[in-house]
Image (tube, rainbow, N blue to C red):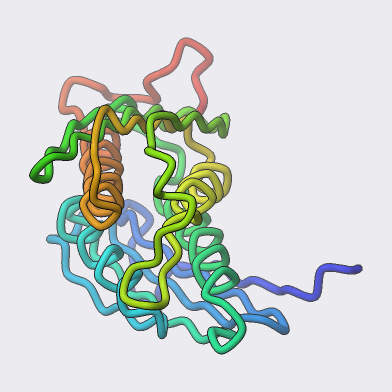
Length: 216
């Protein structure tokens, strides 16, 4: 079946080249997604996906990454939330990749461990330009739990895998221990946000691209 999607990527007209801002839109027969981000923001968010718990997680992602995030999504949630969650990951990932630009002066690597009551999750990120994803440690009840009557936590792994591929980052995500699916999911989102924040932060000692290749 042919891909019926289209996407547009552009910087707002008033954005200077040095600004790490991106806007990406994508529309298919299943979803319509518009994402705008500012990597050097303060964590402001305007999130509307039609999936309440997912909105909560994306707000947490913005708050802990300090990325200003606007996401407006509509999709076939009457069928399932899967398409909306997956396609939001695609577009958010593309926006992160676009906003990073040539990656001059970035720290590149970042890691964060986030506890939430009985849960401890860890994320490690390399903004390498080479997408790769590893996830381990989620308990088996993640495969069958539904939060708020609409968000199936089985999609956590797929969301982060899709995000890492389209952001072109290497992401390792580990749940060291946890019991409550809400706590696990929230700790994962916050850990990934904090790791990306650390990796995308400008290093005043790094004048160019932090790679022996000269490009990322």
